[in-house]
Image (cartoon, rainbow, N blue to C red; front, side, top):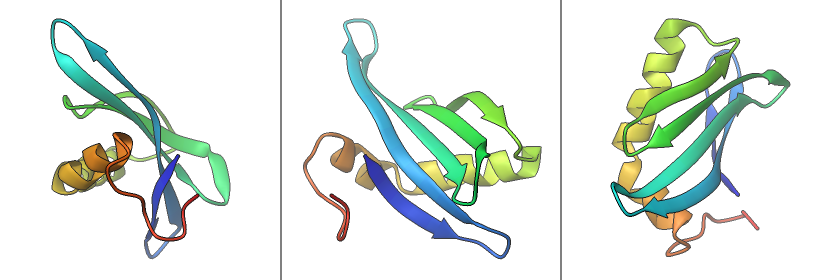
Length: 92
């Protein structure tokens, strides 16, 4: 499920909610994938709520830190979308 697009000076990034699951030990988790719209080989995958980047290719370390901050700043909305509580306009 696509969450949103982020427009930067250099590229448009696609943020997608890939998976949501729950464990008895630590509760709910989301897997988020962020990739460049015109270069799908440049991507990063994060697990929330730890904001851990577990796979990445093509992004600089500073870009990964900015992506992590974006996820932190928008965590409530991302979680609500992952649970199906809200739907982004124009996203099917």
